[in-house]
Length: 338
Image (cartoon, rainbow, N blue to C red; front, side):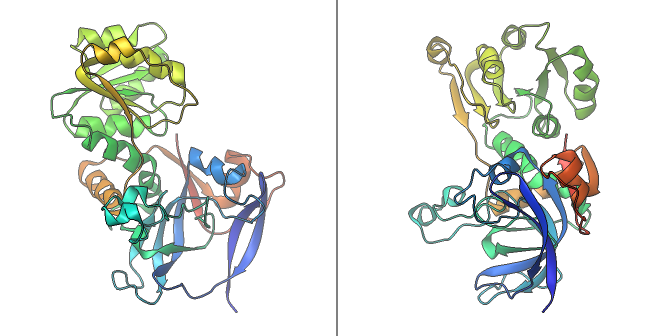
């Protein structure tokens, strides 16, 4: 019986390379041969044991690009040989109360690859057909992979923010999310402001497309945004609540701060919100078609992640330091958004 290689984790950070049996996909599912899998901060959910059953071995990874290897019964939208992607949300069920209302993002029975079901740190991944994404042939799989999480989260939040071309849109942070957010904001025609710590980040911000750079170490970001008339949208990509709190005063009247970075706490000023009808909201990824739109826009506009590439074993051992002992890497690759 043919097998495939996978890096599975049990409990907390207990990695091992195993051989698993290749089986036929279940009804409504597709078997995908993995070409690339990104490394995301959210992988800690699986790696650190923050998942439904930490004792059950799990393969992490949810920024997956691959090729359809087999289709299960009832799957009519995908064919063997097609290049596909799979992101943080593994496909809606189509039957729960949220799905019946067309709210597929908040499906009550949606798997999360790498957390509630096996992900892409393997040669093979099995996925719901509703979670798959078509990948433009022009895109390098290694560059496309991070766009299925960091990419869709920033792009989808911005395109649903209500901002119009020419509006002031500030992106807080220049990390894995932020460096993509700045690119998308600039390509969408917004007056893009990048906010980060230190003057040394300015060249990168300008390179990514920012028209204005604010150094939050030496400047008051809220005051600087108000000099521009206030930000119609602030996209907060950082995971530090104090940094988010420091920029809320920079919102324009009726402006919105969209939080996509998972901070433990956030202090808000009711006065800032009340005086000017300002708001703060969260944004959560998107559906498979949203991911497909993200890839299409990225291919058209030239948005690409800044990445490092390495064999999966090196990615697990060296980059993330998840495993205590070196292991033999399989042939798939990991890519990390900086």
